[in-house]
Image 1 (cartoon, one colour):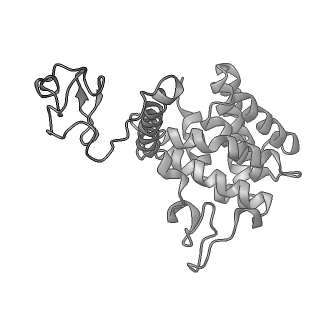
Image 2 (cartoon, rainbow, N blue to C red):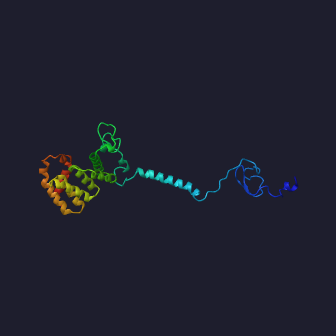
Image 3 (cartoon, one colour):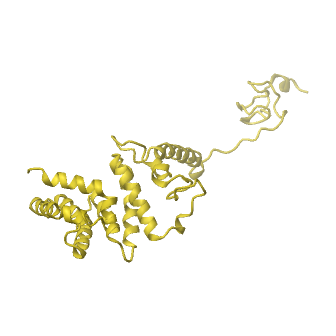
Length: 261
């Protein structure tokens, strides 16, 4: 071995590279790793991946961003529709409740009674489906849960539109749903249909009065109020089941009609 080799004056054994043991960057002419001391050319090879570029470099960050969005959406979904002043989280109202859906409570629109397994909504008749949705919306409207009313209203309206031969009670339900969702033309149409069958029908008259007020027709509303008061006693004397079911609403409408402007 020559003195030149011992003094290191000869050409370097390797050009700039990386330590095979720890992967540290080596300067040109280095014989040992300055980090771990491994002689050049010894040690287990370290696999070094080339720097990612383009889509490959963006992908990990994109995945993380999507995951973050999913997390935010999950928490936001838990409070969907929870408008300020609402009595309950809007999204929670999509679940069955004993107060609205009966004792079964195993699925939306479950039939009550007996605590048995709830039937599939597809097994309900169109009339049952419409009535169940009406009851749900009225419960929420009376409780001030406007978020839930808005959530279920399109479904309830569609269910009533599917009734081929709606009864007077079902038409009144349709009109009441329209009233609490501020759909005045629908309420007017249902009131007109009821009154076409019986001009003194109390449900038709009170619905017509409310629809007129929704439309800003104060004079028209007053005329329906007067007709309601005139027909009140004779119609109640008929003891129609519809009147018994909605007696509280009829009495409230009569009280409102008696109030001075």
